[in-house]
Image 1 (tube, one colour):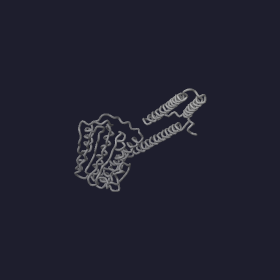
Image 2: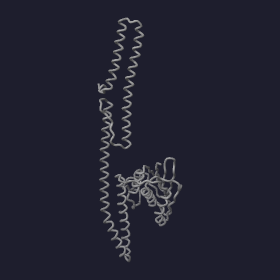
Image 3: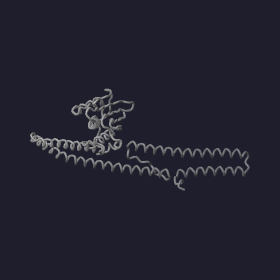
Image 4: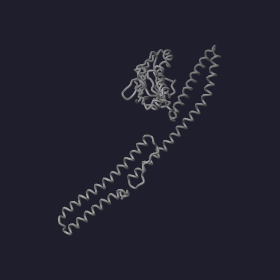
Length: 341
């Protein structure tokens, strides 16, 4: 039987069997020789046999408990990040077969993790190379476009075309920069330089950055939250994440629209919300808006490139945070970021 493949189980059953045989032999001898008070001796022998069996079981199960505790400790250490742990499985039996399978699973997971890491690095380097290759022609095109604008001051049609060309070049440059940022986050090559930042100051700087555009479009950016709230974060990356949400809100609000940046502190987290009273998001799109390059068939906007929201989500997750969205068509949209303290 497979159960007796384990040496320790075999010893346990052998010990119990020997105790039973010894008790039986002693009882038969006492009865055969008609020993005085044989019944009392048999009871004492029975109690001794039970005590020995209990002791054998205690020793066996205590040792099994220690083995399981050690296995659990190794698994916990692996979950904590130590990829080199293994569970000792140098014996026979079903339990050690289980340990062997766990070790095999750990090796497979490590191999997959290594392959994924290599794939991410390859993707990062590929996008990095492509982006650098694009920067040179983009810079040249910007210079050429500027020269055309200078020469086309008296030619309205050419001046208009050069202005549109400049907008498209800016879009391409933004796309390249966002691709670089997403690639860095994906590859895990970004080192977050975290420090305690005042959320009010970060929000005010973002408001100032978009103030000129908001005034031109006759929109308003409002701030709401305590000036005492701080967040442990990388200021540049968090600014990037919130800025993407504010830009998205401005893109989808009409003249006279209002964009709110709000922040609150709870016992275990800091919450930052960017909401607007714009056109809202169609229910069909809510589950897809964080996908890269996703474009809604209901959106009339042709300016977006579909990387702002995925980049924001990646930044929030890099800070061990979460992001969620609530939206009602014709009423507005609210993006909420939660960061554990």
